[in-house]
Amino acid sequence: MKITSIRTALFCSPLKTPFKTALRTVENLEDIVVLIECDNGFIGYGEGAPTAVITGETLGTMEAAISYLAPMLTGLSILNDFEEILHRLHTRLLHNTTAKAALEIALYDLRSKAENKPLYKLLGGTQTTFDTDITISLNDIDQMIIDSLKAISLGYSILKIKLGNDPLQDIDRIIAIHNAVPKDTILRLDANQGWSKEDSVLVMKTIEAKGIISQCIEQPIKADDIAGLRFIKERIQTPILADEAVFNLAQAIFVLESGSADYLNIKLAKCGGISEAIKIANKAKEFGVSCMMGCMLEGPIGITASLHVVSALCDVITMIDLDAVALLSKPPTDCSVVFNESKIILSNESGLGIKYANK
Image (cartoon, rainbow, N blue to C red; front, side):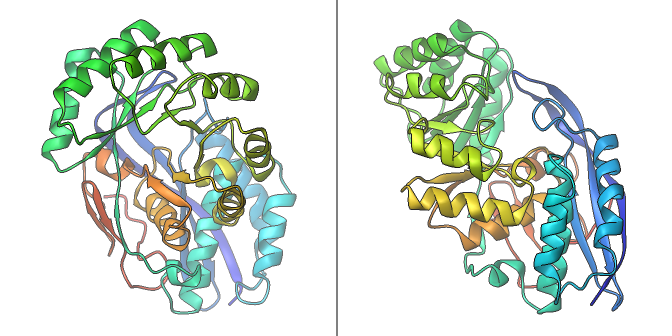
């Protein structure tokens, strides 16, 4: 089962509403899809979302990285050379984590198809049904309340509230949403690096004084300020979730050893794919730290791949932020995975249980 070709395509879809954070506004999803073909006719599918303000990658850089790596992987066997393929993927080109993740997803899709298993079983998982949160984009307070109540009406019980453009306004946003939604609603706060460490403490202490303890506050300050994360952690009750501060295993170990965060957010696009995500999750488990599985603005291929990993590591990956398909204006096609708002159900088909279709 040797790789004969590696090519790319585009998965494009408008979003239901603009996706707004402190870092960017996106109206249309445009992702790279990787298709790896083998000499027995099998095709593996991968996907990566360009996120220039986080990973530094664009559609153009991802295309270039995949084209650069493709000749180094072509001709190798999925069954006999899998570890060598992954080694080349991660050592022949630095950075470019989303491009590598897209390639890895397609490779793991092929590997599990070769063994006629769904990927989650190949990875040692059993869970097939999952509940995700939903992102509430950064807008004026009235719109964020409307969006939050709509999400509740669709069955979501966990809301991820985007913040970060104005600390004082953010306090008002949090309080207003907390007062508007049912009391058993779980709130996750995400400032996307938009606050200073002092503002972070101010915001969180203010809402905590009003009895609002969210499940976490995600990456409130700049990614490279690990000391700042610890500064905040020592002064608030709400757990801190490190996101952009943790791209790879080395950064995860640094955050864990320094005690700078309560949780880690793993994203395939940040760490370079499934193999690296597993390493980070296992290291977090050693420290007794739970993780979130997050995503970029990915289509069904990327989201499904992340869930297969969650299935295998559900003892440490206890939070799921994989709502990107629910944000699309059109439901996915060519897919045996069930996407029903907050609920996602993996199929028993071999591989990912999904194909590429831009319809």
